[in-house]
Length: 353
Image (cartoon, rainbow, N blue to C red; front, top):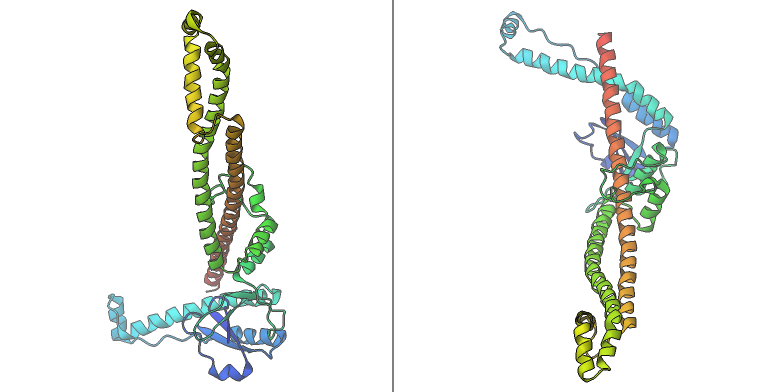
């Protein structure tokens, strides 16, 4: 059986004709239910829907209170008859409000704005909500994922998503324009098979973990980068003072002592930088500039790779954040528009009384 989520106080059920008698009522959630069989074509489906919303409930007249009950009610004392009339008045007000939006609902149905949402139910599980086009024969519904449905709704209303700095992960990007590209969003959803909001949540959780690991690895590489850039600097200073040390080692006797006194600072600096460079070299390995350069190059290559991966992951998370943020804004706008329409209907109703 397929349940079609309806409009406001109405819901619709699509099922095999043989199973119609076994349908349960929709309950208090939607209030009314209409059964549509697979054999119904588009016109038949529309006529059944219209027959439901065209069914007028009669306004119930209030009952006579009587003198005693009227006197008590005027004093602020509630009576049984007064309670009955209050319930009737509340019911009648609801009926009048329903009449107010029936004509609008008809127009929405005729324009094709009315949206059906499939939800297949089995004994033990409930499949993902999927959207169908009511113009397609309901016997062969085109099932789409809930995320794809949301994307299509977004694409109908916006060619580019609005990118706001308050959306998570967005602020780190200087050029935020690409984050609002709907085509790149669609590619992200398709590539990663994000069909349900649970898929999106799991993907975001996994990518957030990847991003945190990237940050930790970059922090560790930053320490190694400082180590090997310092080693390069120390090696350059070591080489600067090496000729002084070689000249000193070539001397003997009084000339050596005299040279030492004259170049004592240079000889001390040579020893300092030599020891620093030897400290980063593997044990029993002579000082080697190619080795130091290789270590620094490896660190830089690793940093570049992790930064690219981090940027890609952050871009995916930011793009999903913008997607969800735009959906929230659209929903909020729809609620505001709906509230404004209801207020206008209430005003029209008050003017007709």
